[in-house]
Amino acid sequence: MATSQPLILPGAGPFALYTVFKVTGDRAAVVKQCQQVHQLVKTLNEQQDADLRASIAFGKSFWLGFEQGCPEGLTEFVELGKGDVTAPATGGDILLHLNSSRHDLNFLLLRQFMEPIADQLEVMDETYGFKYLDARDMTHFIDGTENPSTLEARQDVAVIKDGEFAGGSFVMLQRFVHNLPAWNRLNIQAQEKVIGRTKPDSVELENVPAASHVGRVDIKEEGKGLKIVRHSLPYGTVSGDHGLLFIAYCHTQHNFEVMLESMYGETDGKTDQLLRFTTAVTGAYFFAPSLELLNAL
Ligand code: HEM
Ligand code: MG
Image (cartoon, rainbow, N blue to C red; front, side, top):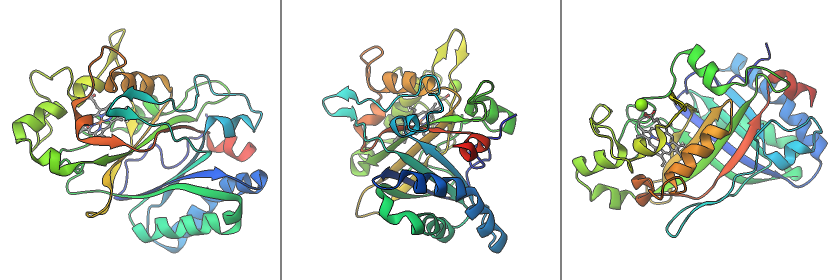
């Protein structure tokens, strides 16, 4: 069976780095460096104790340049919502996702990755994520409770099983900027109704409101729950932008689309109440090929 990229299946360590690039120069040189990334990680892991892992993924229009065919259902991100509640589509050619137990080594790996190709690409977004408290989002609700936890479950949800793209994953990324003063004006009960779970210990409410976050994204199709593997982490500075870098992996892009349409009012007119307190400033889909296909590009 084809091998999924090393970051995807293990649970996330406490530090991540999410970098989105636009390729402006020598495509072949950039692709060659993408193929080096797991070797760079391996070398750093041999020198340092970091549990560093990476995944590299490509936006649709960049992927089509490989002439390898297109994973079924892969599209560029499409803007959603209306009025104050919108999800912009910002795209990107390449996503480098790093996760480790050390902030400094994520930084160092990105430097090593970029050094030989710095003139060939532009950084569209470089966001450092960190585990916050006991795995809470900055709303102070636990994030990740319903994430598939066993390796088998994560593999089942995140990785394409058969066909020419076996071992690959679809990736969705959105950077959210929170409005915490507005959020903190709600009392705990009101906050719990927005999320659909309890605040101290993340227990699902007996009556999950339809427009709560969980009410929007806990979706069944033909009796089966739609699942994704989330790798999101909080990011930012107190005085500047801060919030959640949402990122998830799935064997199909469909699950992301259904969840987003439900959150942004396109399914039944109801919008996710969480979006009153946080705004997406980026949005992109990528495809992370298996290690074997990455090396064959
Ligand atoms: C669940 C926070 C965006 C998909 C949750 C939970 C929290 C949370 C607190 C409940 C605990 C858990 O099961 O993890 C947030 C925040 C977001 C955000 C703060 C943005 C600022 C998104 C987006 C999607 C998504 C954009 C997908 C398009 C999910 C899913 C669950 C979940 C699938 C599990 C639902 C279940 O099966 O019960 N999120 N989320 N989230 N979220 Fe989000
Ligand atoms: Mg559920």
